[in-house]
Image 1 (cartoon, helix red, strand yellow):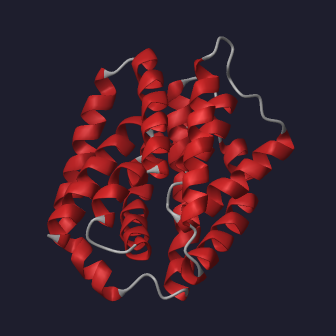
Image 2 (tube, rainbow, N blue to C red):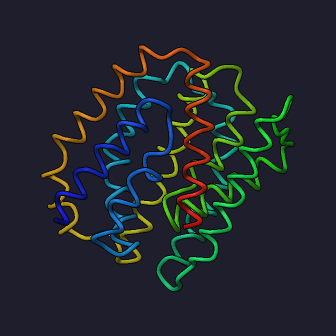
Image 3 (cartoon, rainbow, N blue to C red):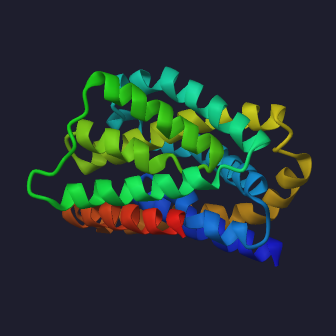
Length: 235
């Protein structure tokens, strides 16, 4: 049952991740939490984010907003380390619910006419820290990065590519921190080998679907998944 739900969660999560550039962990996490504790679920997700990062970044390298990526690097590093420390030593469930409420409020604001949130340089650093922090604790920092990247990029193509870059950067920080904290184990790496064929299929099918969707549809999907993720985090 553990392996079956791991396969389903990773397949569905990375199928969505490939289409829109984020939400892989938000979609996969509920499946994984049925059969394993939160730290183990974060470790499995981190393994597959690490595997997918070189592919995503290589394919979309020309569309990534590299200046924005560099601005988020330092604050994200600090946030990830802080989040993993909390994951190792505490049970931060109330923060998960608070993040869910915040995400839903952001979606409601985005639905208003001219509702895009304008973030100054200092706020981008703050959101970068929070994105890294929640990526470390729950592997769900993507929506916070969406709030930054969505408002700093001119189109969906650049948004999607930059999200791949940001989440790849966070993963590279998170993997060694999880290993040092004793959360990432050799047994998890072994179990992941059985999931890789389904993971590759998810990326292949996700790429096919992405090529058939237009920008307006993708924007609606992004907001819809943000709202869904907020609700899932609350409950």
